[in-house]
Image (cartoon, rainbow, N blue to C red; front, top):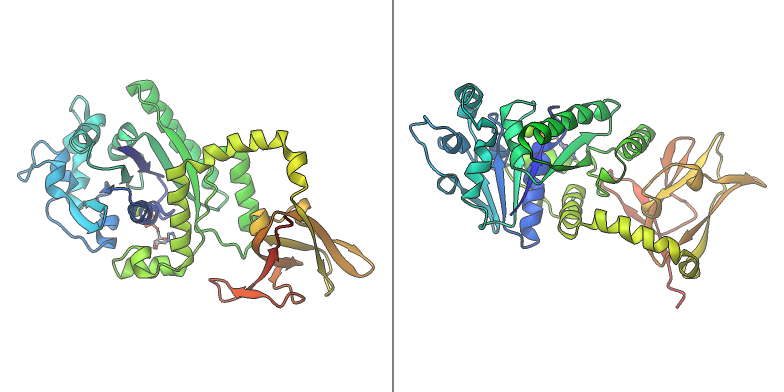
Length: 360
Ligand SMILES: Nc1ncnc2c1ncn2[C@@H]1O[C@H](COP(=O)(O)OP(=O)(O)O)[C@@H](O)[C@H]1O
Ligand SMILES: [Mg+2]
């Protein structure tokens, strides 16, 4: 069983949303997944319509009158997706275990019971760096740290990583971590700037998958459903599915290796690329960018169009495939009006669609 702690001491950055929907996505991929709600506020449990008197507190506590094992509290949510729910009693565990030896390893001990029953276990942490979060870090093989694309994201993660280092030094348990950008608003230039900053600081630790802001996610929670049960065609569902694939295939790590190997054969590969010229003949005072699926919607020097004879142009080498894209004209996102092929995006606007044919 591979254990992931979804942690960040900042509230509202998407821990619960990520833990619940990623668990659902892993299960859809045929992976038996257990979600542990480790937050006394029990948002993950409530978000899945589960309110129980007996919960994870009764597994961790030694004095609870309902003391039981992890197996006893499990609620079945969907095929391959189980939940160990929480309730407000969990808020007393800090105090209760204060003088216990091995209090940082309580959850780790409890989890041993089920280690052969699931492929994945996700732990939804509370929004602080207290004993419960330390227990989650101590139990986990990896941490997923959701962050919003905001200026303060980087500092928050650095503090959390200090705790990870502390757990390593004091308890001799090393845990890898990855950063997940959530609530990403691709309409704002600011989001891309912050994304670049986050990537600069955390490099390959940032998941390739980005979870976009999507109102369906909020709606699904108010109906006590996962995004897949609520609207499997939504952007939110696509993003969490993509994250689950990245985790299952280890695509991120794999991509690093492939990139290194690719550099050696890049000249050969270049022959398979087609040069596509994007042009914008409308009025722009300052800048025009072409952003799309082929460049991660990034505004940078490589996506900036250059003006000549009244027309803005940019040549981009693309592999065969289909790509959605838009122009950003003086900071405003617009459709390519010269391209009749377009598709509605989750914001109700039109993305232009380009198909690059396979030359072979
Ligand atoms: N990608 C997203 N798009 C839209 N709303 C989101 C997204 N991620 C989280 N939210 C909303 O933000 C709020 C906080 O998210 P939550 O997962 O509860 O954060 P945390 O567990 O870190 O406190 C919730 O109302 C949730 O619906
Ligand atoms: Mg939460």
